[in-house]
Image (cartoon, rainbow, N blue to C red; front, top):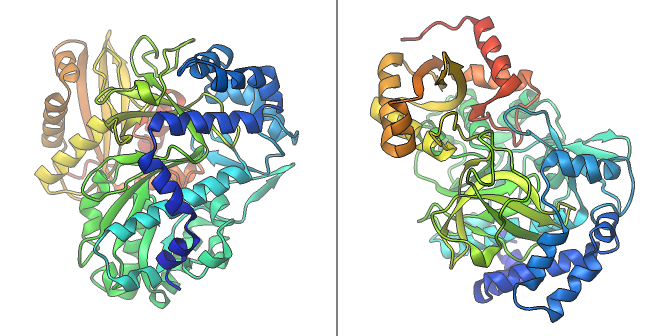
Length: 519
């Protein structure tokens, strides 16, 4: 049976989509927070912060009183604070800490630009929510002019190993591995690479096994991080001696991606195609499935407002964050009915996995408040603002996209380091491409594009931001470094900004390889 028909028969996700379409964002979110707090009121966290008393204001208080009470009683948390005060107890096997029951799974997240992996609790309720939102996104395909037989084709989901590691009282692994191990039985017919290959722990071995089996599958949809899917498709094309991936998978129509901007990869990715794909972006973090692109004609993604997550928005300003992207104490926070378009907000979430007022680390803007449509502009600690240049990952991605087109080269990876130089500052760019290009020319054009995109950057280039350098490196070097860091494959992405010890490790790594200028 076609997957779309199966979902429509179930009707569950369709009903939830209609609820979000015809109910105000404020009412959906107020109801979601109420449900979360009802479930968690008897946990250690809920008792400590008086959830039972806060819940009374949902019924008797004024329109916004529930939120005023919530933020006055429950503090904001970053990862270190919530882990050290609460989540470590759940890791030790204790029940009913931040959400009812015992946490069986912890997702290993890549952490920030200068940190080791984070352990994010994954409850059975969160797994169910992620699954439901994934199916809701698939339902949006009914809006597209697609051949009906597409929904009988395989869906290749390239993620981490489902062979999770047992660690004391819980299992740990990549979120994609945790969720793939929990797929419903009716979906297994469509799911590739299948249970056996999905268990493979070694990333290189997994790609080899998928490559060997690729010709046996009829794939219509591919899902994963752009860098790793591009590497896989290149391997398949080379292995079978064909020109494009469509020579192996002629019915491939859709690419569902997330975790990192697709634009730097798009040029090289499309060299592997015979005909265009529909691109659908997702915002699936280790902490939950937050948003997805519902229409191909626009870049923005629709926030999921009624599936286990309550959102808050912290204006990303010096009042609320240090120059290093650290959230200050008692920041200004807003609910969904208080936001504006065009303003950058850091995202706080409370979830059915036991995150409460938790700083997820991403910075977003609203493309449409009315439709709750957002796009990601960067991460709180991946901005560069050494001297007020306020350079976002969104600026970086766009500049790289523009110079790639201008020089007709494929820049698949990049990272930027900020440094102090003689009382002033410098940006050190490392660009990954296998094409030949002159570094000096590339540096001048990249610098110019950034000045065109960001007025603050332009001002500081005439003052405190003394130097901007570009180093061109082979693309493979970026993936070699990730492997050395234990971050190969799955949902891992190369950080767009490296800080602190990670920046020093990267410089030492590059120096040890003694890579010559390819120009």
